[in-house]
Length: 318
Image 1 (cartoon, one colour):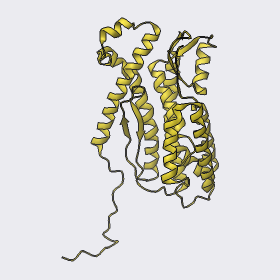
Image 2 (cartoon, rainbow, N blue to C red; image 1 turned 180 degrees about the vertical axis):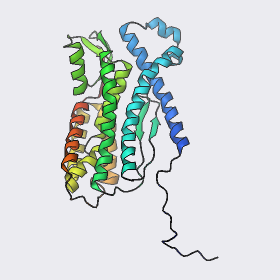
Image 3 (tube, rainbow, N blue to C red; image 1 turned 180 degrees about the horizontal axis):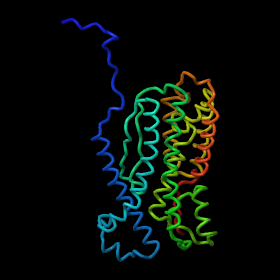
Image 4 (cartoon, rainbow, N blue to C red; image 1 turned 90 degrees about the vertical axis):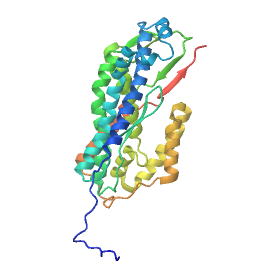
């Protein structure tokens, strides 16, 4: 049997925005579960620091303390704000993909057995090339801005409901870096904390903290991260030099804090397999319009407010 000859008159291009809804729903539900488990630990740790939960309570609950029902419900105070922040970020990308008719998937939420976060974030898959610099910029910048707008109310509420706790010099504690925005809200609400006193973040505040960390990481002006898309939109082919400098600074930051190792490894792998040059856009030499340059500056401001050079450190008592 001979194949029918190709005809432009009868050709139907593949439909865009076709989704496997069951997979997105399944991953979302799994991420709700994993982040709620992490949220229980944040809630118990917060109440323990305040003295509401005691060692006797934890011993009575046993090793499966995170399955105690009232604590599971309380764990939602971390998981729901976090998923709202991550979801706003990814749907910001998706909305502008729809606006510019760039085929993309719905968000894939990514559960992970990590006690601290319960997730490694969320992603969408963009299935075709960007048709223009405007589309690239709008899609790249929309996620961080949407996530930031969603995050700020949770951050304000979470910080203002956090607890001032005294730590002895011999205590073993985790130190979470304080971005400028968090510092400003804490200073506004609590004033200057005396020596030996620090804040223990409410689970809602920690969800916002993780949202700030994810936003700052995504806004790094490197490769095909959101910040890399923005940098390429602003600088064109010269953005590869910005990517090189960003990778160098990230490697240096590993010396400052080992918590940068995973990000540095990811960026090195991207540099090896994808290179520093961003995939070209037809109008890459055409400058951005003034309105989008203002938005690019806003993205830079968000990065500065969310960035911390020491995300996580452990201080061991002596």
